[in-house]
Image (cartoon, rainbow, N blue to C red):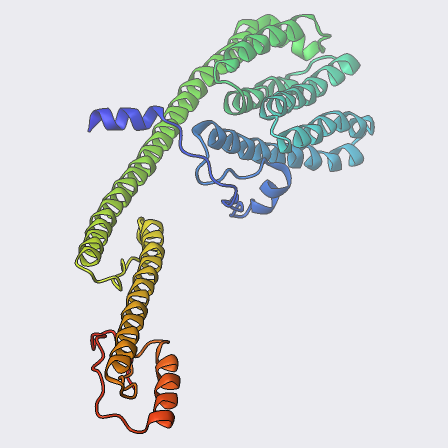
Length: 376
């Protein structure tokens, strides 16, 4: 059983014949998935195809949340003192919309990279812009914590190990920004007193998030793969059972068909040319039975033709003997009907003989067997 399962695992499921259609995405986000995610794979799709569809839906849902967050910031841009923020927000919004088109086309990797880039650009501009204008303040420190959003997205949409490189970039960029960007007086004092804690907070948060999300996503992916593999094995085992049942049914049909064809041959060999093989189209041997029945029908017709020829020959011989006997005895021709086409000639000769010589004294019995004679 283990060998069977191993062979089933490494074998790919058979492709459909084109009739199986993709199932429509359901749920509250079904309409969004149909617009922005790759098409749902068919039921007989491979593991990679199903994983691609799953990642596509995850990317689509993530982009929806990111776009809503960007749009939620527009009231602040219009009502706040800096109207330039509205144009700044167009940059990540444009990147996210572009990612939707790539995601719909099945380019999940490119779409995931664009999502991360959009988050990085949005957060980066929210830090660099105010810092260049008025210097970094303690109010802006939580902006560095928001970089973990990109970590979550990267570990979910891209390869899990990509979060390690992204965290390293975040740590380097955060330390560089805090160190070299202009500072406000308040921020400079705080950095002089608690500078180590400021850097440690950012570095610790990035490392913890990277470690936890990496373990969580890799574990989830392994669980999904095991579930998909178990589902595929179950489907393959079911198909194997159905195949074995089909083979058993075919073997049963073969046994029945062979027995019926043999019985038909025996009946024909015993002289029953009307015997036929009673096999329908549901039997695998129906074509052989159909050809055999056609052959038997022709053989029966040939046999009947031979019997007719023999009857005709016997009738002709009988008529010749009757004529010869009538000539020897000098009596009118008296013969019985034979049930063959020769009867027309017998009737003509008998009528002429009676009209010329009168009623005869007797008739000659027909030599045609009763089973060959047609009813009068």
